[in-house]
Image 1 (cartoon, rainbow, N blue to C red):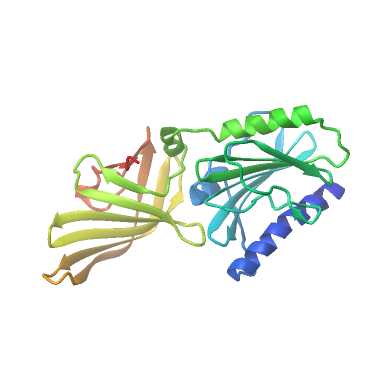
Image 2 (cartoon, one colour):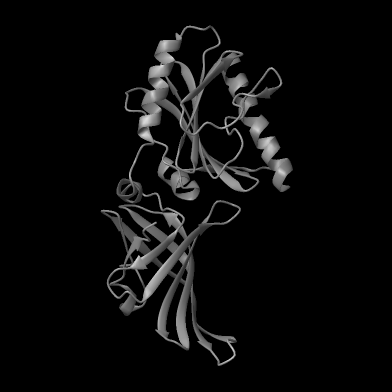
Length: 282
């Protein structure tokens, strides 16, 4: 019981701070899979490559300016908390040691360690994503060398390239271009609740374009599904004023991720079914 209570208290600390920051009564949302929280947060959390993983819990926590992915589980009696967040300036571990957050100033080039109060922690960065791993060890059974090896392994889980990122169901927040028609582009962003918002723009002429908006969620077989697609035909007059005409609302469909390419094969519009979106080169 001691283990469960202490870990719950850690999670509540961060949850309460996030709730105060964004004015929400409960910023924690339960989800059904690791893929889903990765999709929502733009992270690359992974299942441990060992047998005997139990008590898995998948959550997102709405914080000020970002949404945190949290994966809790147990291995060999140890309770783990694996976290990730994009564009988080502060320590996301949620652990306070001696009245201060476990990690101080961010050092993106290092794998940093901290411990105390029966906890062992590590933090690292991959691009603009911060990750932490926390293991509860109240009796100090695990030696530092073992923990460092575990932390390095979890860090390696998150070292992925863009193609692997996409093929594993994690959609980066950036611009995408249709490599087939070269007339369509797509913007992917996260709203304050961590939902993935997509806008597709198809240029019909210099004076008109079609725009689709939708909210994506992780489906099966590499699909990113939506059921709220809205299409508008927009014309632009000589003074730059736009006028929008409704084409349809609340339509369902999906994109399919394969080999780093986002295929709009589930589009309701036939001319969109051949679109193949790739991330803009930066």
